[in-house]
Image (cartoon, rainbow, N blue to C red):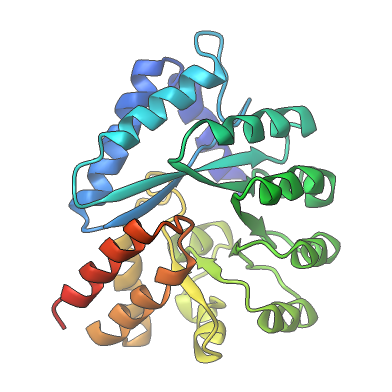
Length: 277
C-alpha cells in the first residue's frame, strides 16, 4: 500500500498545469469509453490538496479543467465527478473541497480517501454531514487497514457506498452484512495492496454468496494496470462465472450510481435492456 501512495505522489508532481489536467482527464475518459463503459464516476485525488492546488494552478482552475473534459465526454459514456477528501490534509482542506461541490451539477458526491494510517473519519464527520445536507452522495474508503473504531463510525454515519473493506474482523464484517451498504470491490487493487497470491483469498466471494450489494470497480487503472473489462475477466477466470453472471453483477450495481436524475437512469435502463444476452 505504501508503494501505491508513492506512485500517486509522483504522478501528482507532474500534473501541475490546467492544460495537463484537462488532457489527462480527457484521455482517461476516452480509455473508459473504449473499454465499453457507459457510466463512469471519476474521483479527484491529490497529494497536497483535493481537488489539487499547485503553485501554478488554483483548486478552482484544477476543477474547471476536470469538469470541462467531463462535459466533452464522447457519447454514449456518461461521466460524473466525485470530490475526494484526503484524510491527511485536515478539516480546512476538506471544507474547501465541499464548498466546490456546489459549483457544478456534474459533481454528484464526496469521497473520503488517502493514506489510511493517517487521521480518522471521525475527525471529518461534520464535513460529510454537511455534504449529505447539500444533497450529495457519499462514499468512504473503509477498512483498508484494521481499524474497528473508525469502521464502526463509518457504519454509524451510513454512507451510500463503502470501498475496499479488506481488513474487517468477523464482528465488523457481520455488522456490514447487516447494514447492506453497497460495496465497491476493486480486485486488482486489493490483490496488490494486500499482497494476495490468489483471488480465492479475497473477500469478494463471501459477499457475493451472501447476495450482498456489490459494484465492481477499477480503483486507479494506471497504478494497478487494469480496466473494468479486466476486473470482470478476473471473476470469470478465478470463479468460473459465465457471461450471464457477469452481466447480472453489472446490472445489479446500477441502482448504486450517484446520479439520481430520471434522464440518466432512463438512458442506462435502455442500454441494459438492449444489451445482447
